[in-house]
Length: 371
Image 1 (cartoon, rainbow, N blue to C red):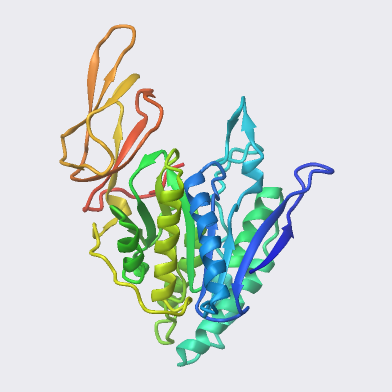
Image 2: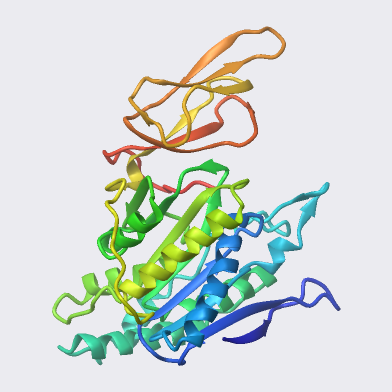
């Protein structure tokens, strides 16, 4: 393992931040797998998985089994990790401007396409090399204006030319689920099965330019732009949601890391016998079919359905009780599907989303991720 520190923009004079990067295998070897944890800095389940993954990769490297290149960023957001408000960590949003650390990544597809348009050939692997370099070149020219942008540019430069990008997150309370590009669902199916995911949410464009799509979308969009010249889906990226905020343990972290290692073995980044793939617990469903369960009024939240439960449209998911009047109202599911996430605080305001159900029929448009 080789460890490097990448300097980031200071938050203030004398306030220096850096990004820790662990590298395994030979630089430039393929497949190249990029893994980062805690882009939303207060989401610790991914961080504990990265901790155990580092140990497992060190052991595999000592055995000479790293066949590709694996890049691990165990704590991807030192800005968010330094933020506290009244004693509580705030890692999802930049307190300087309110921006989500997993939104607003640069879309360099059009410019990269212009750069390679006359150089693309009938050789798909040559095209992959051309596109990867073009993406890196265009990203290098992105003008940053604040520390958060510098962080985003640094992370994306580490990931954008990888074969696989695994971005480790968690929800408030949740079962394991993942987000990915529609055209990556098949390639990432074994990972979903190995992790025991209960929902795989797919979209061509989910909205607001999250990190994983900045890595995967270029390949789909350039393939569509140049249909007469073969451009494979050369980067499969996913946001992995490792349960809920409080689900931090050695048992889960070690098991999640082992699943990631098994997937890297399947894709050839780690040498060894290919592991058996368990039966998947779910099929991919459209992100546009995910419906929120909304609190119809303000009050205490008493859930009647747990994460992982299958619900039907109209099922009562929670009762909302006004603490002053005692009036109770029902919050109902809007679609059939798996209730895969819900809020942690048991109080809601009217109109607040309190849970999410992975439905099978695409019904929503626009920004599909929300804040």
